[in-house]
Image (cartoon, rainbow, N blue to C red; front, side):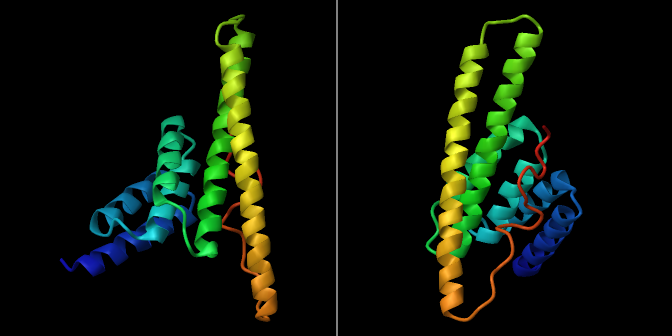
Length: 168
């Protein structure tokens, strides 16, 4: 078939699955689209957010890699979405390590608790830095929009809010 049409169809399906909360199927469709056009920023970003929201620990690690592999963006509207996504990954991984430490303590296992808590704190620190960067980029964008007489954009990514999609 026509690669452009195949890409557009896969991307349409991915966005539809993402919008309906079916993140596992969104991941599959974003992967199919990226096989056709691997440098598409919205598609890579969609894959990263879908991986994040599947709530599978292994998918979180992959989401972190995908957000990082996208690389810094020149366009601040794109960069804020990438930075915010990475911060959400870091926050979620930090929560998971803290949960693991608590589970170990509940079982009476002291071994590994200090290490898990140290890793959790490091992810929390990285998340805070990321969220602060995203806020700074958003503030700069708001000033530009205001100077241009524009209206503010929505949140960095659809369906994102503090604590959204985090199983805590």
